[in-house]
Length: 457
Ligand SMILES: *Cc1c(COP(=O)(O)O)cnc(C)c1O
Image (tube, rainbow, N blue to C red; front, top):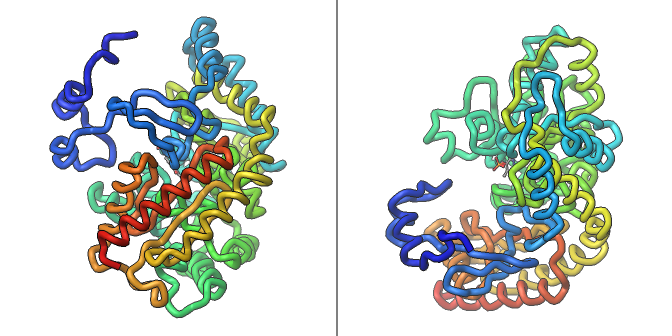
Protein backbone atom coordinates (compact mmCIF):
# COMPACT_ATOMS: atom_id res chain seq x y z
CA UNK A 1 0.00 0.00 0.00
CA UNK A 2 1.22 3.45 -0.80
CA UNK A 3 1.21 6.11 1.83
CA UNK A 4 -1.75 8.11 0.46
CA UNK A 5 -4.18 5.29 1.27
CA UNK A 6 -3.23 5.46 4.95
CA UNK A 7 -4.75 8.87 5.48
CA UNK A 8 -8.18 8.83 7.06
CA UNK A 9 -11.24 10.53 5.63
CA UNK A 10 -10.94 13.70 7.70
CA UNK A 11 -7.28 14.11 6.80
CA UNK A 12 -7.97 13.63 3.11
CA UNK A 13 -10.88 16.07 3.24
CA UNK A 14 -8.80 18.72 4.96
CA UNK A 15 -5.99 18.29 2.45
CA UNK A 16 -8.48 18.39 -0.39
CA UNK A 17 -10.08 21.61 0.87
CA UNK A 18 -6.63 23.16 1.24
CA UNK A 19 -5.20 22.24 -2.16
CA UNK A 20 -7.56 20.67 -4.64
CA UNK A 21 -9.65 22.77 -7.03
CA UNK A 22 -12.32 20.42 -8.36
CA UNK A 23 -13.97 20.59 -11.80
CA UNK A 24 -17.59 21.84 -12.07
CA UNK A 25 -17.68 22.63 -8.36
CA UNK A 26 -18.68 25.44 -6.04
CA UNK A 27 -15.36 25.44 -4.17
CA UNK A 28 -16.66 27.33 -1.17
CA UNK A 29 -19.59 25.00 -0.65
CA UNK A 30 -17.48 21.88 -1.17
CA UNK A 31 -14.80 23.04 1.25
CA UNK A 32 -17.45 23.46 3.93
CA UNK A 33 -19.18 20.17 3.22
CA UNK A 34 -16.14 17.96 2.63
CA UNK A 35 -15.50 15.76 -0.38
CA UNK A 36 -16.59 12.18 -0.56
CA UNK A 37 -13.51 10.04 -1.03
CA UNK A 38 -14.05 7.04 -3.30
CA UNK A 39 -11.48 4.39 -2.52
CA UNK A 40 -12.16 1.33 -4.59
CA UNK A 41 -14.60 -0.30 -6.97
CA UNK A 42 -15.63 -3.64 -8.38
CA UNK A 43 -18.21 -4.46 -11.06
CA UNK A 44 -20.96 -1.81 -10.72
CA UNK A 45 -20.14 -0.92 -7.09
CA UNK A 46 -18.02 1.77 -5.44
CA UNK A 47 -16.78 1.92 -1.86
CA UNK A 48 -16.06 5.21 -0.14
CA UNK A 49 -13.45 5.83 2.55
CA UNK A 50 -16.07 5.25 5.26
CA UNK A 51 -16.74 1.76 3.89
CA UNK A 52 -20.12 2.60 2.34
CA UNK A 53 -21.03 0.51 -0.69
CA UNK A 54 -22.67 2.43 -3.53
CA UNK A 55 -24.22 1.22 -6.78
CA UNK A 56 -22.78 3.39 -9.54
CA UNK A 57 -25.77 4.28 -11.68
CA UNK A 58 -23.64 6.66 -13.76
CA UNK A 59 -20.69 4.38 -14.73
CA UNK A 60 -18.36 7.01 -13.30
CA UNK A 61 -19.09 9.82 -15.72
CA UNK A 62 -20.81 7.74 -18.40
CA UNK A 63 -17.55 5.95 -19.10
CA UNK A 64 -16.92 2.75 -17.16
CA UNK A 65 -18.77 0.65 -19.74
CA UNK A 66 -17.15 -2.72 -18.95
CA UNK A 67 -17.41 -2.15 -15.19
CA UNK A 68 -14.76 -1.74 -12.51
CA UNK A 69 -12.06 -4.17 -11.48
CA UNK A 70 -11.06 -5.48 -14.91
CA UNK A 71 -7.64 -6.98 -14.40
CA UNK A 72 -7.18 -7.43 -18.17
CA UNK A 73 -7.26 -3.64 -18.64
CA UNK A 74 -4.79 -3.05 -15.83
CA UNK A 75 -2.56 -5.76 -17.25
CA UNK A 76 -2.70 -4.26 -20.77
CA UNK A 77 -1.60 -0.87 -19.39
CA UNK A 78 1.12 -2.43 -17.24
CA UNK A 79 2.61 -4.52 -20.03
CA UNK A 80 2.55 -1.61 -22.46
CA UNK A 81 4.16 0.71 -19.93
CA UNK A 82 7.01 -1.72 -19.48
CA UNK A 83 7.40 -2.13 -23.24
CA UNK A 84 6.93 1.49 -24.32
CA UNK A 85 5.22 3.87 -21.88
CA UNK A 86 5.24 6.82 -24.22
CA UNK A 87 6.20 7.87 -27.62
CA UNK A 88 4.66 10.52 -29.82
CA UNK A 89 2.79 10.12 -33.09
CA UNK A 90 4.23 13.32 -34.55
CA UNK A 91 7.22 13.29 -36.93
CA UNK A 92 6.32 10.17 -38.93
CA UNK A 93 6.17 7.88 -35.87
CA UNK A 94 3.57 5.50 -34.54
CA UNK A 95 3.33 2.72 -31.96
CA UNK A 96 1.74 -0.73 -32.39
CA UNK A 97 -1.27 -0.32 -30.06
CA UNK A 98 -2.27 3.03 -31.57
CA UNK A 99 -2.12 1.65 -35.10
CA UNK A 100 -4.13 -1.42 -34.13
CA UNK A 101 -6.67 0.61 -32.19
CA UNK A 102 -7.31 2.85 -35.22
CA UNK A 103 -8.04 -0.29 -37.26
CA UNK A 104 -10.16 -1.88 -34.52
CA UNK A 105 -12.28 1.26 -34.20
CA UNK A 106 -12.72 1.51 -37.97
CA UNK A 107 -13.94 -2.11 -37.91
CA UNK A 108 -16.86 -1.28 -35.60
CA UNK A 109 -17.59 2.24 -36.91
CA UNK A 110 -20.14 2.84 -39.68
CA UNK A 111 -18.84 1.45 -43.00
CA UNK A 112 -18.02 4.87 -44.50
CA UNK A 113 -15.78 5.86 -41.55
CA UNK A 114 -12.30 4.35 -41.62
CA UNK A 115 -9.88 6.85 -40.11
CA UNK A 116 -9.23 7.95 -36.54
CA UNK A 117 -7.45 11.01 -35.13
CA UNK A 118 -6.47 10.38 -31.50
CA UNK A 119 -6.88 12.89 -28.68
CA UNK A 120 -6.74 12.81 -24.87
CA UNK A 121 -10.41 13.52 -24.08
CA UNK A 122 -13.83 14.32 -25.46
CA UNK A 123 -13.21 18.07 -25.21
CA UNK A 124 -10.01 17.79 -27.19
CA UNK A 125 -11.86 15.68 -29.74
CA UNK A 126 -14.26 18.55 -30.33
CA UNK A 127 -11.38 21.01 -30.64
CA UNK A 128 -10.02 18.69 -33.30
CA UNK A 129 -13.42 18.63 -35.00
CA UNK A 130 -13.53 22.43 -35.16
CA UNK A 131 -10.07 22.55 -36.70
CA UNK A 132 -10.63 19.70 -39.12
CA UNK A 133 -14.02 20.95 -40.32
CA UNK A 134 -12.50 24.29 -41.27
CA UNK A 135 -9.44 22.67 -42.79
CA UNK A 136 -11.71 20.50 -44.93
CA UNK A 137 -13.60 23.46 -46.37
CA UNK A 138 -10.38 25.39 -46.96
CA UNK A 139 -9.05 22.46 -48.97
CA UNK A 140 -12.31 22.34 -50.89
CA UNK A 141 -11.80 25.99 -51.84
CA UNK A 142 -14.82 27.06 -49.79
CA UNK A 143 -13.14 28.88 -46.94
CA UNK A 144 -16.27 30.97 -46.36
CA UNK A 145 -17.83 27.92 -44.80
CA UNK A 146 -16.72 28.42 -41.21
CA UNK A 147 -19.80 28.55 -39.02
CA UNK A 148 -20.79 25.52 -36.99
CA UNK A 149 -24.40 25.18 -35.93
CA UNK A 150 -24.90 23.55 -32.56
CA UNK A 151 -27.74 23.26 -30.07
CA UNK A 152 -28.73 25.03 -26.89
CA UNK A 153 -28.09 22.75 -23.90
CA UNK A 154 -25.87 20.43 -25.91
CA UNK A 155 -22.65 19.33 -24.22
CA UNK A 156 -19.41 19.03 -26.14
CA UNK A 157 -16.80 19.49 -23.42
CA UNK A 158 -15.18 22.18 -21.37
CA UNK A 159 -12.25 23.53 -23.37
CA UNK A 160 -12.82 26.82 -25.17
CA UNK A 161 -13.93 25.14 -28.39
CA UNK A 162 -15.82 22.38 -26.55
CA UNK A 163 -17.72 24.81 -24.34
CA UNK A 164 -18.42 27.08 -27.32
CA UNK A 165 -19.79 24.21 -29.36
CA UNK A 166 -21.80 23.20 -26.33
CA UNK A 167 -24.90 25.17 -25.54
CA UNK A 168 -24.66 25.51 -21.76
CA UNK A 169 -25.55 29.10 -20.95
CA UNK A 170 -23.84 29.04 -17.54
CA UNK A 171 -20.58 28.01 -19.18
CA UNK A 172 -20.92 30.67 -21.87
CA UNK A 173 -21.55 33.39 -19.30
CA UNK A 174 -18.40 32.65 -17.31
CA UNK A 175 -16.09 32.30 -20.26
CA UNK A 176 -17.24 35.04 -22.66
CA UNK A 177 -18.24 32.27 -24.98
CA UNK A 178 -19.03 31.09 -27.55
CA UNK A 179 -16.07 32.06 -29.69
CA UNK A 180 -17.03 33.55 -33.07
CA UNK A 181 -18.32 31.20 -35.75
CA UNK A 182 -20.51 29.03 -33.54
CA UNK A 183 -24.29 29.52 -33.32
CA UNK A 184 -26.98 27.59 -31.46
CA UNK A 185 -30.49 26.43 -32.30
CA UNK A 186 -33.16 25.05 -29.91
CA UNK A 187 -32.90 21.52 -28.55
CA UNK A 188 -35.43 18.73 -29.17
CA UNK A 189 -36.51 18.62 -25.51
CA UNK A 190 -40.22 18.00 -25.77
CA UNK A 191 -40.97 17.43 -22.07
CA UNK A 192 -39.40 20.72 -21.06
CA UNK A 193 -40.08 22.91 -24.05
CA UNK A 194 -42.70 21.26 -26.24
CA UNK A 195 -45.58 23.45 -25.04
CA UNK A 196 -48.87 22.48 -26.67
CA UNK A 197 -47.27 20.57 -29.53
CA UNK A 198 -47.31 16.78 -29.63
CA UNK A 199 -43.84 15.19 -29.38
CA UNK A 200 -43.93 14.43 -33.11
CA UNK A 201 -44.90 17.97 -34.06
CA UNK A 202 -42.25 19.37 -31.76
CA UNK A 203 -39.57 17.05 -33.17
CA UNK A 204 -40.21 18.36 -36.68
CA UNK A 205 -40.29 21.94 -35.42
CA UNK A 206 -36.96 21.58 -33.58
CA UNK A 207 -35.31 19.96 -36.61
CA UNK A 208 -36.57 22.72 -38.87
CA UNK A 209 -34.71 25.26 -36.75
CA UNK A 210 -31.60 23.86 -38.44
CA UNK A 211 -32.92 24.66 -41.88
CA UNK A 212 -34.03 28.11 -40.79
CA UNK A 213 -30.54 28.80 -39.43
CA UNK A 214 -28.82 27.56 -42.59
CA UNK A 215 -31.02 29.84 -44.67
CA UNK A 216 -30.48 32.77 -42.34
CA UNK A 217 -26.69 32.45 -42.48
CA UNK A 218 -26.45 31.30 -46.09
CA UNK A 219 -25.30 27.80 -47.03
CA UNK A 220 -21.97 29.21 -48.22
CA UNK A 221 -21.18 30.25 -44.63
CA UNK A 222 -22.15 27.04 -42.85
CA UNK A 223 -19.49 24.40 -42.30
CA UNK A 224 -21.20 21.82 -40.12
CA UNK A 225 -23.97 20.85 -37.73
CA UNK A 226 -22.92 19.20 -34.46
CA UNK A 227 -25.18 17.22 -32.11
CA UNK A 228 -25.23 14.36 -29.66
CA UNK A 229 -27.51 11.50 -30.78
CA UNK A 230 -29.08 11.77 -27.32
CA UNK A 231 -28.06 14.74 -25.16
CA UNK A 232 -26.35 13.33 -22.10
CA UNK A 233 -25.23 16.06 -19.72
CA UNK A 234 -28.20 18.18 -20.80
CA UNK A 235 -30.49 15.65 -19.11
CA UNK A 236 -30.67 12.48 -21.23
CA UNK A 237 -32.81 14.25 -23.79
CA UNK A 238 -34.14 11.75 -26.28
CA UNK A 239 -35.41 13.49 -29.39
CA UNK A 240 -38.97 12.74 -30.54
CA UNK A 241 -39.09 10.04 -33.24
CA UNK A 242 -39.61 12.64 -35.94
CA UNK A 243 -36.47 14.63 -35.13
CA UNK A 244 -33.58 12.73 -36.71
CA UNK A 245 -35.47 11.81 -39.91
CA UNK A 246 -36.28 15.50 -40.43
CA UNK A 247 -32.66 16.50 -39.73
CA UNK A 248 -31.55 13.93 -42.30
CA UNK A 249 -33.99 15.31 -44.85
CA UNK A 250 -32.57 18.80 -44.30
CA UNK A 251 -28.92 17.72 -44.39
CA UNK A 252 -29.51 15.98 -47.72
CA UNK A 253 -30.44 19.34 -49.24
CA UNK A 254 -27.38 21.30 -48.15
CA UNK A 255 -23.67 20.79 -48.53
CA UNK A 256 -22.66 20.85 -44.85
CA UNK A 257 -20.85 18.34 -42.68
CA UNK A 258 -22.49 16.36 -39.90
CA UNK A 259 -20.70 15.92 -36.58
CA UNK A 260 -22.27 13.36 -34.26
CA UNK A 261 -20.75 13.59 -30.80
CA UNK A 262 -20.52 9.96 -29.69
CA UNK A 263 -18.61 10.61 -26.47
CA UNK A 264 -21.51 9.15 -24.44
CA UNK A 265 -23.52 7.18 -27.00
CA UNK A 266 -20.48 5.45 -28.51
CA UNK A 267 -19.20 2.04 -27.43
CA UNK A 268 -22.48 0.34 -26.70
CA UNK A 269 -24.53 2.75 -24.62
CA UNK A 270 -27.58 2.62 -26.93
CA UNK A 271 -27.31 -1.10 -27.72
CA UNK A 272 -25.35 -0.44 -30.93
CA UNK A 273 -21.67 0.32 -31.24
CA UNK A 274 -22.55 3.96 -31.90
CA UNK A 275 -25.59 6.18 -31.49
CA UNK A 276 -25.26 7.01 -35.19
CA UNK A 277 -26.14 3.40 -35.94
CA UNK A 278 -29.10 3.53 -33.55
CA UNK A 279 -30.52 6.51 -35.45
CA UNK A 280 -29.14 5.52 -38.87
CA UNK A 281 -27.10 8.71 -39.27
CA UNK A 282 -24.24 9.22 -41.71
CA UNK A 283 -21.83 11.56 -39.94
CA UNK A 284 -18.57 12.95 -41.27
CA UNK A 285 -17.08 13.15 -37.79
CA UNK A 286 -17.69 11.17 -34.64
CA UNK A 287 -15.85 12.55 -31.60
CA UNK A 288 -15.35 9.72 -29.10
CA UNK A 289 -13.86 9.29 -25.58
CA UNK A 290 -15.34 7.93 -22.31
CA UNK A 291 -16.37 4.32 -23.15
CA UNK A 292 -13.44 4.09 -25.58
CA UNK A 293 -11.20 2.94 -22.72
CA UNK A 294 -14.04 2.45 -20.20
CA UNK A 295 -12.34 5.35 -18.42
CA UNK A 296 -9.39 3.24 -17.25
CA UNK A 297 -7.01 5.69 -18.91
CA UNK A 298 -7.83 9.04 -20.49
CA UNK A 299 -8.23 8.86 -24.25
CA UNK A 300 -10.38 10.31 -26.98
CA UNK A 301 -10.48 10.48 -30.72
CA UNK A 302 -12.35 11.61 -33.80
CA UNK A 303 -13.57 9.03 -36.29
CA UNK A 304 -13.51 10.61 -39.73
CA UNK A 305 -15.53 9.77 -42.85
CA UNK A 306 -13.86 8.58 -46.02
CA UNK A 307 -14.78 11.72 -47.94
CA UNK A 308 -13.18 14.00 -45.35
CA UNK A 309 -10.13 11.77 -44.85
CA UNK A 310 -9.63 11.49 -48.62
CA UNK A 311 -9.66 15.28 -48.96
CA UNK A 312 -7.09 15.70 -46.17
CA UNK A 313 -4.88 12.93 -47.52
CA UNK A 314 -5.05 13.58 -51.25
CA UNK A 315 -4.59 17.31 -51.00
CA UNK A 316 -1.54 16.97 -48.78
CA UNK A 317 -0.03 19.86 -46.83
CA UNK A 318 0.53 19.71 -43.12
CA UNK A 319 -2.46 19.88 -40.78
CA UNK A 320 -1.01 21.94 -37.94
CA UNK A 321 -2.86 20.27 -35.11
CA UNK A 322 -2.28 17.49 -32.58
CA UNK A 323 -1.62 16.66 -28.97
CA UNK A 324 1.39 15.32 -27.10
CA UNK A 325 -0.73 12.38 -26.02
CA UNK A 326 -2.40 11.69 -29.39
CA UNK A 327 -2.17 7.91 -29.77
CA UNK A 328 -0.69 7.38 -26.29
CA UNK A 329 0.60 3.77 -26.27
CA UNK A 330 -0.68 2.73 -22.84
CA UNK A 331 -4.10 4.32 -23.36
CA UNK A 332 -4.29 2.71 -26.80
CA UNK A 333 -3.40 -0.69 -25.35
CA UNK A 334 -6.24 -0.28 -22.85
CA UNK A 335 -8.57 0.85 -25.64
CA UNK A 336 -7.73 -2.26 -27.67
CA UNK A 337 -8.25 -4.56 -24.71
CA UNK A 338 -11.52 -2.80 -23.88
CA UNK A 339 -12.75 -3.45 -27.42
CA UNK A 340 -11.67 -7.08 -27.15
CA UNK A 341 -13.67 -7.46 -23.94
CA UNK A 342 -16.73 -5.84 -25.51
CA UNK A 343 -16.50 -8.15 -28.51
CA UNK A 344 -15.66 -11.40 -26.69
CA UNK A 345 -18.31 -10.87 -24.03
CA UNK A 346 -20.83 -9.77 -26.67
CA UNK A 347 -21.65 -6.72 -24.58
CA UNK A 348 -23.47 -4.88 -27.37
CA UNK A 349 -25.84 -7.84 -27.80
CA UNK A 350 -26.24 -8.09 -24.05
CA UNK A 351 -27.27 -4.44 -23.82
CA UNK A 352 -29.58 -4.58 -26.80
CA UNK A 353 -31.29 -7.89 -26.09
CA UNK A 354 -31.25 -8.16 -22.32
CA UNK A 355 -30.08 -5.31 -20.13
CA UNK A 356 -31.72 -2.40 -21.99
CA UNK A 357 -35.18 -3.98 -22.46
CA UNK A 358 -35.13 -4.99 -18.81
CA UNK A 359 -33.98 -1.63 -17.50
CA UNK A 360 -36.46 0.26 -19.68
CA UNK A 361 -39.35 -1.95 -18.57
CA UNK A 362 -38.44 -1.45 -14.91
CA UNK A 363 -37.93 2.30 -15.03
CA UNK A 364 -41.09 2.79 -17.12
CA UNK A 365 -43.04 1.65 -14.05
CA UNK A 366 -41.62 4.62 -12.11
CA UNK A 367 -43.91 6.85 -14.19
CA UNK A 368 -46.72 5.80 -11.84
CA UNK A 369 -45.05 7.57 -8.94
CA UNK A 370 -46.77 10.81 -7.91
CA UNK A 371 -43.53 12.78 -8.23
CA UNK A 372 -42.75 11.58 -11.74
CA UNK A 373 -43.95 13.37 -14.86
CA UNK A 374 -42.14 11.32 -17.46
CA UNK A 375 -39.67 8.46 -17.71
CA UNK A 376 -37.69 8.02 -20.90
CA UNK A 377 -34.74 5.96 -21.99
CA UNK A 378 -32.80 4.30 -24.78
CA UNK A 379 -30.32 1.50 -24.25
CA UNK A 380 -28.73 1.95 -20.85
CA UNK A 381 -29.60 5.62 -20.61
CA UNK A 382 -32.57 6.80 -18.60
CA UNK A 383 -34.20 9.97 -17.29
CA UNK A 384 -36.91 10.68 -14.75
CA UNK A 385 -38.67 14.06 -14.78
CA UNK A 386 -39.68 15.27 -11.32
CA UNK A 387 -42.80 17.43 -11.31
CA UNK A 388 -45.25 19.07 -8.99
CA UNK A 389 -48.21 18.29 -11.24
CA UNK A 390 -48.12 15.28 -13.54
CA UNK A 391 -51.06 16.40 -15.67
CA UNK A 392 -49.83 19.90 -16.50
CA UNK A 393 -46.03 19.19 -16.42
CA UNK A 394 -45.81 21.97 -13.82
CA UNK A 395 -42.44 22.07 -12.04
CA UNK A 396 -41.65 22.84 -8.44
CA UNK A 397 -41.14 26.58 -7.94
CA UNK A 398 -37.56 26.27 -6.64
CA UNK A 399 -35.95 24.97 -9.82
CA UNK A 400 -33.47 22.17 -9.24
CA UNK A 401 -34.28 21.73 -5.55
CA UNK A 402 -36.23 18.49 -6.08
CA UNK A 403 -33.43 17.13 -8.25
CA UNK A 404 -30.78 17.98 -5.68
CA UNK A 405 -32.90 16.45 -2.92
CA UNK A 406 -33.29 13.20 -4.89
CA UNK A 407 -29.61 13.10 -5.76
CA UNK A 408 -28.67 13.41 -2.09
CA UNK A 409 -31.26 10.81 -1.10
CA UNK A 410 -29.76 8.47 -3.71
CA UNK A 411 -26.39 8.80 -2.00
CA UNK A 412 -27.84 8.07 1.43
CA UNK A 413 -29.54 5.00 -0.06
CA UNK A 414 -26.34 3.72 -1.65
CA UNK A 415 -26.91 4.79 -5.25
CA UNK A 416 -25.24 7.30 -7.56
CA UNK A 417 -27.54 9.13 -9.94
CA UNK A 418 -27.12 12.60 -11.33
CA UNK A 419 -29.58 15.48 -11.23
CA UNK A 420 -29.84 17.94 -14.12
CA UNK A 421 -32.21 20.55 -12.77
CA UNK A 422 -35.23 18.46 -11.81
CA UNK A 423 -34.36 15.58 -14.10
CA UNK A 424 -32.78 12.49 -12.57
CA UNK A 425 -30.52 10.65 -14.99
CA UNK A 426 -28.80 7.28 -15.11
CA UNK A 427 -26.18 5.58 -17.24
CA UNK A 428 -25.00 2.41 -15.48
CA UNK A 429 -22.10 0.21 -16.62
CA UNK A 430 -23.09 -1.95 -19.60
CA UNK A 431 -22.32 -5.08 -17.60
CA UNK A 432 -25.03 -4.41 -15.04
CA UNK A 433 -26.98 -7.61 -14.30
CA UNK A 434 -30.75 -7.91 -14.02
CA UNK A 435 -30.43 -8.40 -10.27
CA UNK A 436 -28.40 -5.21 -10.04
CA UNK A 437 -30.98 -3.39 -12.17
CA UNK A 438 -33.65 -4.57 -9.71
CA UNK A 439 -31.56 -3.24 -6.85
CA UNK A 440 -31.03 0.11 -8.60
CA UNK A 441 -34.70 0.58 -9.47
CA UNK A 442 -35.73 -0.51 -5.98
CA UNK A 443 -33.53 2.21 -4.54
CA UNK A 444 -35.05 4.76 -6.92
CA UNK A 445 -38.56 3.89 -5.65
CA UNK A 446 -37.37 4.44 -2.10
CA UNK A 447 -35.73 7.73 -3.01
CA UNK A 448 -38.88 8.99 -4.76
CA UNK A 449 -41.05 8.07 -1.76
CA UNK A 450 -38.70 9.84 0.64
CA UNK A 451 -38.46 12.88 -1.65
CA UNK A 452 -42.24 13.11 -2.11
CA UNK A 453 -42.70 13.06 1.63
CA UNK A 454 -40.13 15.80 2.18
CA UNK A 455 -41.60 17.91 -0.63
CA UNK A 456 -45.07 17.47 0.77
CA UNK A 457 -46.70 15.99 -2.34
C1 LIG B 1 -18.16 14.25 -21.58
C2 LIG B 1 -18.48 14.74 -22.94
C3 LIG B 1 -17.56 15.50 -23.67
C4 LIG B 1 -16.25 15.96 -23.06
O1 LIG B 1 -15.40 14.92 -22.77
P1 LIG B 1 -14.18 15.17 -21.73
O2 LIG B 1 -13.44 13.87 -21.80
O3 LIG B 1 -14.79 15.46 -20.41
O4 LIG B 1 -13.40 16.28 -22.26
C5 LIG B 1 -17.86 15.84 -24.96
N1 LIG B 1 -19.02 15.48 -25.52
C6 LIG B 1 -19.95 14.79 -24.84
C7 LIG B 1 -21.22 14.39 -25.53
C8 LIG B 1 -19.72 14.41 -23.53
O5 LIG B 1 -20.65 13.76 -22.85
